[in-house]
Image (cartoon, rainbow, N blue to C red; front, side, top):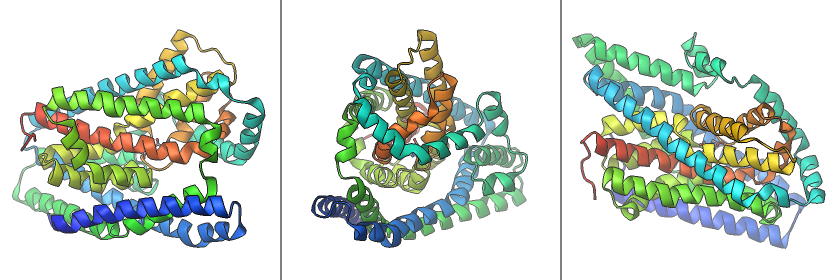
Length: 430
Ligand code: ASP
Protein backbone atom coordinates (compact mmCIF):
# COMPACT_ATOMS: atom_id res chain seq x y z
CA UNK A 1 0.00 0.00 0.00
CA UNK A 2 1.29 3.46 -0.87
CA UNK A 3 1.47 5.73 2.15
CA UNK A 4 2.68 9.14 3.11
CA UNK A 5 5.89 9.15 5.10
CA UNK A 6 5.29 9.18 8.88
CA UNK A 7 6.95 12.59 9.26
CA UNK A 8 4.49 14.18 6.81
CA UNK A 9 1.82 12.49 8.74
CA UNK A 10 2.85 13.92 12.06
CA UNK A 11 2.86 17.36 10.54
CA UNK A 12 -0.67 16.77 9.25
CA UNK A 13 -1.83 15.77 12.73
CA UNK A 14 -0.54 19.07 14.06
CA UNK A 15 -2.10 21.04 11.24
CA UNK A 16 -5.44 19.36 11.93
CA UNK A 17 -5.20 20.27 15.61
CA UNK A 18 -4.26 23.85 14.76
CA UNK A 19 -7.22 24.09 12.34
CA UNK A 20 -9.47 22.77 15.07
CA UNK A 21 -8.34 25.20 17.76
CA UNK A 22 -8.15 28.18 15.39
CA UNK A 23 -11.66 27.51 14.03
CA UNK A 24 -13.09 27.20 17.52
CA UNK A 25 -11.35 30.36 18.71
CA UNK A 26 -12.36 32.37 15.64
CA UNK A 27 -15.95 31.20 15.96
CA UNK A 28 -16.22 31.97 19.65
CA UNK A 29 -14.62 35.35 19.12
CA UNK A 30 -17.11 36.13 16.35
CA UNK A 31 -19.98 34.95 18.51
CA UNK A 32 -18.86 37.15 21.40
CA UNK A 33 -17.94 40.29 19.44
CA UNK A 34 -20.58 40.20 16.72
CA UNK A 35 -23.46 38.06 17.94
CA UNK A 36 -26.05 37.48 15.23
CA UNK A 37 -24.31 39.79 12.72
CA UNK A 38 -25.65 39.21 9.18
CA UNK A 39 -22.16 38.80 7.71
CA UNK A 40 -21.60 35.75 9.87
CA UNK A 41 -24.47 34.00 8.15
CA UNK A 42 -23.11 35.03 4.75
CA UNK A 43 -19.68 33.63 5.58
CA UNK A 44 -21.19 30.39 6.86
CA UNK A 45 -23.53 30.00 3.87
CA UNK A 46 -21.09 30.90 1.11
CA UNK A 47 -17.64 30.14 2.41
CA UNK A 48 -17.11 27.95 5.44
CA UNK A 49 -20.29 25.85 5.00
CA UNK A 50 -19.56 24.81 1.38
CA UNK A 51 -15.87 24.11 2.11
CA UNK A 52 -16.84 21.73 4.91
CA UNK A 53 -19.49 20.10 2.74
CA UNK A 54 -17.10 19.57 -0.18
CA UNK A 55 -14.59 17.94 2.14
CA UNK A 56 -17.21 15.55 3.53
CA UNK A 57 -18.54 14.78 0.05
CA UNK A 58 -15.04 13.97 -1.21
CA UNK A 59 -14.70 11.47 1.63
CA UNK A 60 -18.18 10.00 1.15
CA UNK A 61 -17.49 9.68 -2.58
CA UNK A 62 -14.65 7.30 -1.77
CA UNK A 63 -16.40 5.36 0.98
CA UNK A 64 -18.22 2.78 -1.18
CA UNK A 65 -15.16 1.71 -3.23
CA UNK A 66 -13.07 1.70 -0.05
CA UNK A 67 -15.56 -0.22 2.02
CA UNK A 68 -16.22 -2.77 -0.70
CA UNK A 69 -12.57 -3.41 -1.52
CA UNK A 70 -11.44 -3.45 2.13
CA UNK A 71 -14.07 -6.00 3.11
CA UNK A 72 -13.63 -8.24 0.08
CA UNK A 73 -9.85 -8.30 0.37
CA UNK A 74 -10.03 -8.60 4.16
CA UNK A 75 -12.15 -11.72 3.83
CA UNK A 76 -10.26 -13.18 0.89
CA UNK A 77 -7.00 -12.72 2.85
CA UNK A 78 -8.32 -14.93 5.62
CA UNK A 79 -7.44 -17.80 3.34
CA UNK A 80 -10.16 -20.17 4.48
CA UNK A 81 -13.73 -20.04 5.67
CA UNK A 82 -12.76 -21.39 9.07
CA UNK A 83 -10.80 -18.29 10.07
CA UNK A 84 -13.49 -15.98 8.65
CA UNK A 85 -16.02 -17.76 10.81
CA UNK A 86 -13.84 -17.46 13.89
CA UNK A 87 -13.12 -13.75 13.42
CA UNK A 88 -16.68 -12.98 12.30
CA UNK A 89 -18.14 -14.63 15.38
CA UNK A 90 -15.64 -12.90 17.66
CA UNK A 91 -16.54 -9.53 16.10
CA UNK A 92 -20.25 -10.17 16.49
CA UNK A 93 -19.96 -11.41 20.07
CA UNK A 94 -17.70 -8.51 21.00
CA UNK A 95 -20.02 -5.92 19.42
CA UNK A 96 -23.13 -7.18 21.15
CA UNK A 97 -21.43 -7.55 24.55
CA UNK A 98 -19.67 -4.17 24.55
CA UNK A 99 -22.74 -2.35 23.16
CA UNK A 100 -24.84 -3.91 25.92
CA UNK A 101 -22.39 -2.62 28.55
CA UNK A 102 -22.47 0.82 26.91
CA UNK A 103 -26.26 1.05 26.83
CA UNK A 104 -26.58 -0.28 30.39
CA UNK A 105 -24.19 2.45 31.59
CA UNK A 106 -26.09 5.16 29.77
CA UNK A 107 -29.49 4.03 31.09
CA UNK A 108 -28.11 3.79 34.62
CA UNK A 109 -26.68 7.31 34.46
CA UNK A 110 -29.84 8.87 33.04
CA UNK A 111 -32.00 7.10 35.63
CA UNK A 112 -29.85 8.28 38.51
CA UNK A 113 -29.37 11.90 37.41
CA UNK A 114 -32.78 12.36 35.71
CA UNK A 115 -31.83 15.41 33.60
CA UNK A 116 -35.30 15.53 31.98
CA UNK A 117 -36.94 16.60 35.23
CA UNK A 118 -34.97 19.81 35.45
CA UNK A 119 -35.62 21.52 32.11
CA UNK A 120 -37.27 24.91 32.43
CA UNK A 121 -40.64 24.61 30.57
CA UNK A 122 -40.39 28.15 29.12
CA UNK A 123 -36.94 27.46 27.69
CA UNK A 124 -38.19 24.10 26.41
CA UNK A 125 -41.12 25.71 24.60
CA UNK A 126 -38.68 28.07 22.84
CA UNK A 127 -36.43 25.25 21.82
CA UNK A 128 -39.25 23.04 20.62
CA UNK A 129 -40.50 25.91 18.48
CA UNK A 130 -37.01 26.58 17.12
CA UNK A 131 -36.50 22.93 16.27
CA UNK A 132 -40.00 22.64 14.80
CA UNK A 133 -39.35 22.25 11.10
CA UNK A 134 -36.16 20.25 11.46
CA UNK A 135 -37.86 17.98 13.96
CA UNK A 136 -40.87 17.42 11.69
CA UNK A 137 -38.52 16.46 8.84
CA UNK A 138 -36.70 13.96 11.02
CA UNK A 139 -39.93 12.46 12.30
CA UNK A 140 -41.16 12.11 8.70
CA UNK A 141 -37.85 10.50 7.67
CA UNK A 142 -38.05 8.08 10.57
CA UNK A 143 -41.28 6.70 9.11
CA UNK A 144 -39.16 5.36 6.25
CA UNK A 145 -36.64 3.81 8.62
CA UNK A 146 -37.32 0.12 8.87
CA UNK A 147 -37.61 -1.47 12.27
CA UNK A 148 -37.75 -5.06 13.42
CA UNK A 149 -37.94 -7.80 10.80
CA UNK A 150 -37.95 -5.27 7.94
CA UNK A 151 -34.52 -4.05 9.05
CA UNK A 152 -33.20 -7.58 8.92
CA UNK A 153 -34.67 -8.33 5.49
CA UNK A 154 -33.33 -5.07 4.07
CA UNK A 155 -29.78 -6.01 4.96
CA UNK A 156 -29.91 -8.33 1.98
CA UNK A 157 -30.00 -6.09 -1.11
CA UNK A 158 -32.09 -7.16 -4.07
CA UNK A 159 -30.09 -4.87 -6.30
CA UNK A 160 -26.55 -4.00 -5.39
CA UNK A 161 -26.35 -0.95 -7.65
CA UNK A 162 -29.53 0.45 -6.11
CA UNK A 163 -28.12 -0.24 -2.64
CA UNK A 164 -24.92 1.60 -3.51
CA UNK A 165 -26.74 4.56 -4.99
CA UNK A 166 -28.99 4.78 -1.96
CA UNK A 167 -25.88 4.69 0.23
CA UNK A 168 -27.33 1.71 2.02
CA UNK A 169 -24.12 0.76 3.75
CA UNK A 170 -25.42 -2.32 5.58
CA UNK A 171 -26.63 -3.80 2.29
CA UNK A 172 -23.36 -2.99 0.52
CA UNK A 173 -21.47 -4.60 3.40
CA UNK A 174 -23.59 -7.70 3.06
CA UNK A 175 -22.81 -7.93 -0.64
CA UNK A 176 -19.10 -7.39 -0.02
CA UNK A 177 -19.11 -10.10 2.64
CA UNK A 178 -20.86 -12.47 0.28
CA UNK A 179 -18.53 -11.61 -2.58
CA UNK A 180 -15.50 -12.09 -0.34
CA UNK A 181 -16.78 -15.52 0.67
CA UNK A 182 -17.14 -16.32 -3.04
CA UNK A 183 -13.50 -15.38 -3.55
CA UNK A 184 -12.53 -17.64 -0.67
CA UNK A 185 -14.46 -20.52 -2.18
CA UNK A 186 -13.16 -20.17 -5.73
CA UNK A 187 -9.39 -20.02 -5.66
CA UNK A 188 -8.28 -20.17 -9.30
CA UNK A 189 -5.66 -18.14 -11.20
CA UNK A 190 -8.44 -15.91 -12.53
CA UNK A 191 -9.93 -15.14 -9.15
CA UNK A 192 -6.40 -14.44 -7.91
CA UNK A 193 -6.17 -11.73 -10.60
CA UNK A 194 -9.58 -10.41 -9.57
CA UNK A 195 -8.52 -10.27 -5.93
CA UNK A 196 -5.36 -8.40 -6.94
CA UNK A 197 -7.43 -5.93 -8.90
CA UNK A 198 -9.76 -5.32 -5.97
CA UNK A 199 -6.73 -4.80 -3.75
CA UNK A 200 -5.64 -2.28 -6.38
CA UNK A 201 -8.95 -0.45 -5.93
CA UNK A 202 -8.28 -0.39 -2.19
CA UNK A 203 -4.79 1.07 -2.71
CA UNK A 204 -6.08 3.74 -5.08
CA UNK A 205 -8.94 4.68 -2.76
CA UNK A 206 -6.58 4.96 0.20
CA UNK A 207 -4.16 7.10 -1.81
CA UNK A 208 -6.94 9.42 -2.98
CA UNK A 209 -8.22 9.71 0.54
CA UNK A 210 -4.67 10.56 1.56
CA UNK A 211 -4.90 13.50 -0.85
CA UNK A 212 -8.31 14.59 0.40
CA UNK A 213 -7.13 14.42 4.00
CA UNK A 214 -4.55 17.08 3.20
CA UNK A 215 -7.55 19.43 3.12
CA UNK A 216 -8.62 18.34 6.59
CA UNK A 217 -7.05 21.25 8.52
CA UNK A 218 -8.97 23.80 6.43
CA UNK A 219 -12.22 21.83 6.51
CA UNK A 220 -11.96 21.30 10.24
CA UNK A 221 -11.32 25.00 10.76
CA UNK A 222 -14.58 25.60 8.86
CA UNK A 223 -16.56 23.01 10.83
CA UNK A 224 -15.50 24.45 14.14
CA UNK A 225 -16.06 28.01 13.00
CA UNK A 226 -19.60 27.27 11.75
CA UNK A 227 -20.52 25.61 14.97
CA UNK A 228 -19.12 28.09 17.43
CA UNK A 229 -19.89 31.29 15.48
CA UNK A 230 -23.54 30.36 15.25
CA UNK A 231 -24.20 28.82 18.64
CA UNK A 232 -21.40 29.84 20.99
CA UNK A 233 -21.70 28.06 24.31
CA UNK A 234 -25.27 29.22 24.76
CA UNK A 235 -27.19 26.15 23.80
CA UNK A 236 -24.86 23.91 25.72
CA UNK A 237 -25.56 25.88 28.86
CA UNK A 238 -29.31 25.79 28.37
CA UNK A 239 -29.43 22.04 28.10
CA UNK A 240 -26.53 21.63 30.48
CA UNK A 241 -27.88 18.70 32.50
CA UNK A 242 -28.74 16.66 29.43
CA UNK A 243 -25.45 17.43 27.71
CA UNK A 244 -23.57 16.60 30.91
CA UNK A 245 -25.32 13.24 31.26
CA UNK A 246 -24.54 12.26 27.66
CA UNK A 247 -20.92 13.31 28.13
CA UNK A 248 -20.65 11.51 31.47
CA UNK A 249 -21.98 8.28 29.96
CA UNK A 250 -19.63 8.55 26.97
CA UNK A 251 -16.70 9.30 29.25
CA UNK A 252 -17.41 6.26 31.44
CA UNK A 253 -17.23 4.03 28.39
CA UNK A 254 -14.20 5.79 26.90
CA UNK A 255 -12.08 6.10 30.03
CA UNK A 256 -13.52 3.25 32.12
CA UNK A 257 -14.62 0.36 29.93
CA UNK A 258 -12.19 0.80 27.01
CA UNK A 259 -9.00 0.89 29.13
CA UNK A 260 -10.17 -2.27 30.93
CA UNK A 261 -10.84 -4.00 27.61
CA UNK A 262 -7.46 -2.93 26.30
CA UNK A 263 -5.58 -3.95 29.42
CA UNK A 264 -7.25 -7.28 30.06
CA UNK A 265 -8.48 -8.12 26.57
CA UNK A 266 -5.41 -7.14 24.59
CA UNK A 267 -2.64 -6.52 27.13
CA UNK A 268 -2.19 -3.07 25.63
CA UNK A 269 -1.35 0.09 27.53
CA UNK A 270 -4.44 2.35 27.31
CA UNK A 271 -2.25 5.47 27.35
CA UNK A 272 -0.19 4.28 24.39
CA UNK A 273 -3.39 3.31 22.61
CA UNK A 274 -5.01 6.71 23.06
CA UNK A 275 -1.80 8.40 21.92
CA UNK A 276 -1.51 6.24 18.81
CA UNK A 277 -5.15 6.70 17.83
CA UNK A 278 -5.19 10.48 18.33
CA UNK A 279 -5.46 11.26 14.63
CA UNK A 280 -8.55 9.10 14.20
CA UNK A 281 -10.14 10.71 17.28
CA UNK A 282 -9.60 14.24 16.02
CA UNK A 283 -10.94 13.27 12.61
CA UNK A 284 -14.03 11.62 14.11
CA UNK A 285 -14.66 14.56 16.41
CA UNK A 286 -14.41 17.12 13.63
CA UNK A 287 -16.36 15.29 10.92
CA UNK A 288 -18.99 13.65 13.18
CA UNK A 289 -18.99 10.74 10.77
CA UNK A 290 -17.67 7.22 11.30
CA UNK A 291 -17.76 6.57 7.58
CA UNK A 292 -15.72 9.64 6.77
CA UNK A 293 -13.21 8.60 9.44
CA UNK A 294 -12.89 5.01 8.21
CA UNK A 295 -9.82 5.64 6.01
CA UNK A 296 -8.01 7.37 8.85
CA UNK A 297 -8.97 4.57 11.23
CA UNK A 298 -7.67 1.96 8.79
CA UNK A 299 -4.37 3.76 8.49
CA UNK A 300 -4.02 4.28 12.23
CA UNK A 301 -4.70 0.58 12.84
CA UNK A 302 -2.06 -0.54 10.39
CA UNK A 303 0.64 2.07 10.91
CA UNK A 304 0.28 3.16 14.52
CA UNK A 305 -1.26 0.19 16.30
CA UNK A 306 0.46 -2.23 13.89
CA UNK A 307 -2.53 -4.53 13.76
CA UNK A 308 -2.68 -7.26 11.11
CA UNK A 309 -4.51 -5.79 8.09
CA UNK A 310 -6.66 -8.86 7.51
CA UNK A 311 -8.25 -8.37 10.93
CA UNK A 312 -8.23 -4.59 11.16
CA UNK A 313 -9.73 -4.09 7.70
CA UNK A 314 -12.50 -6.53 8.49
CA UNK A 315 -13.30 -5.26 11.98
CA UNK A 316 -13.02 -1.55 11.15
CA UNK A 317 -15.07 -1.59 7.96
CA UNK A 318 -17.82 -3.58 9.63
CA UNK A 319 -17.45 -1.59 12.84
CA UNK A 320 -17.79 1.83 11.16
CA UNK A 321 -21.46 1.04 10.71
CA UNK A 322 -22.18 -1.83 13.03
CA UNK A 323 -20.23 -1.11 16.22
CA UNK A 324 -21.34 2.30 17.40
CA UNK A 325 -21.08 2.40 21.17
CA UNK A 326 -21.39 6.18 21.34
CA UNK A 327 -24.49 6.20 19.18
CA UNK A 328 -26.17 3.45 21.18
CA UNK A 329 -25.47 5.35 24.42
CA UNK A 330 -26.65 8.65 23.02
CA UNK A 331 -29.88 7.10 21.78
CA UNK A 332 -30.55 5.52 25.18
CA UNK A 333 -29.93 8.74 27.12
CA UNK A 334 -31.96 10.85 24.70
CA UNK A 335 -35.01 8.61 24.69
CA UNK A 336 -35.08 8.44 28.48
CA UNK A 337 -34.38 12.15 28.81
CA UNK A 338 -37.32 13.04 26.57
CA UNK A 339 -39.53 10.52 28.34
CA UNK A 340 -38.66 12.19 31.65
CA UNK A 341 -39.25 15.60 30.13
CA UNK A 342 -42.71 14.68 28.81
CA UNK A 343 -43.56 12.89 32.05
CA UNK A 344 -43.88 9.49 30.36
CA UNK A 345 -43.05 6.85 32.94
CA UNK A 346 -41.25 3.96 31.34
CA UNK A 347 -41.67 0.63 33.08
CA UNK A 348 -38.68 -1.65 33.58
CA UNK A 349 -39.89 -3.76 30.67
CA UNK A 350 -40.09 -0.70 28.44
CA UNK A 351 -36.60 0.33 29.51
CA UNK A 352 -35.47 -3.17 28.63
CA UNK A 353 -37.05 -2.67 25.23
CA UNK A 354 -35.23 0.66 24.83
CA UNK A 355 -31.98 -1.07 25.77
CA UNK A 356 -32.46 -3.82 23.21
CA UNK A 357 -33.43 -1.40 20.49
CA UNK A 358 -30.43 0.82 21.28
CA UNK A 359 -28.06 -2.14 20.98
CA UNK A 360 -29.57 -2.98 17.59
CA UNK A 361 -29.66 0.71 16.65
CA UNK A 362 -25.92 0.90 17.29
CA UNK A 363 -25.63 -1.71 14.56
CA UNK A 364 -28.13 -0.16 12.17
CA UNK A 365 -27.42 3.57 12.44
CA UNK A 366 -25.67 5.11 9.43
CA UNK A 367 -22.19 6.42 10.17
CA UNK A 368 -22.97 9.91 8.90
CA UNK A 369 -23.52 13.19 10.77
CA UNK A 370 -26.90 13.09 12.49
CA UNK A 371 -27.40 9.43 11.58
CA UNK A 372 -28.95 8.77 14.99
CA UNK A 373 -31.76 11.28 14.77
CA UNK A 374 -34.29 9.29 12.69
CA UNK A 375 -33.55 6.26 14.86
CA UNK A 376 -34.21 8.25 18.04
CA UNK A 377 -37.52 9.47 16.55
CA UNK A 378 -38.44 5.89 15.75
CA UNK A 379 -37.71 4.62 19.27
CA UNK A 380 -39.59 7.56 20.80
CA UNK A 381 -42.78 6.69 18.96
CA UNK A 382 -42.22 3.05 19.88
CA UNK A 383 -42.42 3.85 23.61
CA UNK A 384 -45.14 6.48 23.41
CA UNK A 385 -43.06 9.66 23.73
CA UNK A 386 -43.90 12.46 21.22
CA UNK A 387 -41.15 12.15 18.57
CA UNK A 388 -41.28 15.91 17.86
CA UNK A 389 -39.55 16.25 21.23
CA UNK A 390 -36.38 15.70 19.29
CA UNK A 391 -36.63 19.42 18.46
CA UNK A 392 -35.53 20.06 22.04
CA UNK A 393 -32.10 18.61 21.48
CA UNK A 394 -31.45 19.54 17.84
CA UNK A 395 -29.44 22.61 18.79
CA UNK A 396 -26.91 20.64 20.79
CA UNK A 397 -26.94 17.61 18.55
CA UNK A 398 -23.99 18.57 16.40
CA UNK A 399 -21.75 18.90 19.42
CA UNK A 400 -22.96 15.63 20.94
CA UNK A 401 -22.63 13.98 17.53
CA UNK A 402 -18.96 14.93 17.47
CA UNK A 403 -18.47 13.37 20.89
CA UNK A 404 -20.40 10.16 20.24
CA UNK A 405 -18.72 9.66 16.86
CA UNK A 406 -15.33 9.85 18.58
CA UNK A 407 -16.46 7.08 20.91
CA UNK A 408 -17.78 5.09 17.93
CA UNK A 409 -14.45 5.26 16.11
CA UNK A 410 -12.25 4.68 19.16
CA UNK A 411 -14.56 1.77 20.04
CA UNK A 412 -13.92 0.23 16.61
CA UNK A 413 -10.18 0.56 17.11
CA UNK A 414 -10.46 -1.02 20.57
CA UNK A 415 -12.43 -3.87 18.99
CA UNK A 416 -9.77 -4.34 16.31
CA UNK A 417 -7.03 -4.36 18.97
CA UNK A 418 -8.82 -6.84 21.23
CA UNK A 419 -9.90 -9.17 18.41
CA UNK A 420 -6.38 -9.14 16.94
CA UNK A 421 -4.94 -10.05 20.32
CA UNK A 422 -7.57 -12.75 20.90
CA UNK A 423 -6.80 -14.21 17.49
CA UNK A 424 -3.19 -14.52 18.58
CA UNK A 425 -1.97 -12.39 15.76
CA UNK A 426 -1.05 -8.99 16.93
CA UNK A 427 2.32 -7.70 15.75
CA UNK A 428 3.34 -5.68 18.78
CA UNK A 429 1.46 -4.96 21.95
CA UNK A 430 3.41 -1.98 23.20
N1 ASP B 1 -22.53 10.53 13.48
C1 ASP B 1 -22.49 9.21 13.99
C2 ASP B 1 -21.40 8.42 13.30
O1 ASP B 1 -21.07 8.65 12.18
C3 ASP B 1 -23.80 8.52 13.88
C4 ASP B 1 -24.78 9.16 14.83
O2 ASP B 1 -24.81 8.76 16.00
O3 ASP B 1 -25.47 10.11 14.45
O4 ASP B 1 -20.82 7.55 13.88
